[in-house]
Image (cartoon, rainbow, N blue to C red; front, top):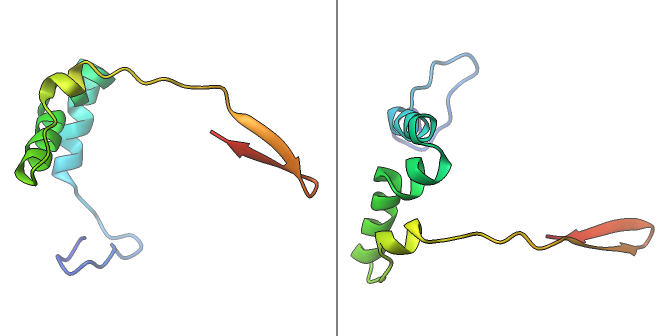
Length: 84
């Protein structure tokens, strides 16, 4: 939040998010996988998970490969319903 109390910025109010800027810079400099999963954002994710008892490692993130199955579509009541 802008004010530390959970309130959103007001219209026209300047909002700075240096943490997000650092993530976007890392993505721009190193690409999606290396700039996120293999860099400090991924390390922060792993550290948080491990702090709460999880077992994820940086190797888990670095070796992850996403799959994208074909979406399923059916017509229901005259509308297309998609599952992705």
